[in-house]
Image: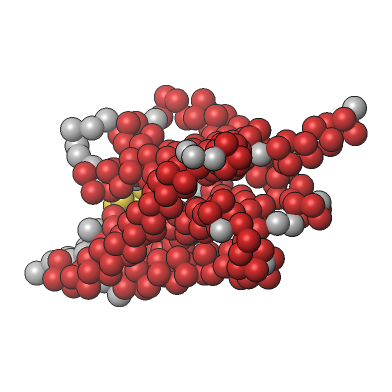
Amino acid sequence: MANVSVITVFVLSGLNETVNHRSIIFFLSLLCYCTILVVNVSLIVIIILDNSLHEPMYILLCAFFMNGLYGTTGFYPKFLWDLLSPVHVISYSGCLVQALVMYSFACSDLSILALMAYDRYLAICRPLEYHSVMSKHRVTKLAFFSWLMPFCIVATNIYLTSRVKLCSSHIDRLFCVNWSIVQLACFPEETTINGIVTNITVIIYVLHGLFIIWSYLYLIKTCISSLESRAKFMQTCVPHLTSLFVFLFTVLFDGMTVRLASKDFPQMLLNFMSTEFLVIPPIMNPLIYGFKLTKIQNKINFFNCVAY
């Protein structure tokens, strides 16, 4: 009979091979987190305070940056604490909450990118209908639901995981992942419904991704024939596409580490692959939009001039 016991804490073993490098990793991680906070908060404040930026695209960008802060806050404080601590443990409830935050953040990012794609489609292909369809009030509600729905979907997955009896408290990662917890189940047959709901969740967000790709392919096809549309596409859509590719690239790596993790891969490599979506997009996205979008760039330049 399986050794069923009540799990109250999980042991995270992802840092076991970093004993000789923790000071460097702590400094780089702290620098990375501070950079994420500064650049995201700065752009959020600029968008909120400036009435000229209270437009659909910038409202969605504000939600995008807020979601980046939400997701990284679920990882960095605990990770930085673990780097300073000789024992790397997390409570059972804390582990479930961390998994909820991290993956609702990732799913919300994809939902917001889908909204951005739809926004650009309307702005370029149906400009006369744009302001009636994408009103400030409607965009604000859509931005809220782009966070709420992923949160509820991921929360459903986490709830099902909380009902599974576990026979181990050892997680070979830097942070808690829903599928890693499910793999600790004493009775695999109990996790069938978890697998089904997880696959449905994956399908939902694969469809999000396909919708985004279709939208931009349609935009590219539309913009080729018009110089004005081409300029608008280059100005506003290229940053979205860059964010999309960065996001898909980093999430793909994280998915590979969850599903294909092997003893043959060095732990440091697996750690790097699994944390890319918490490092690269939250830093790259504000920089991409800050430098590429003229209105935001002008506001940044204005504040710099005032400061001097």
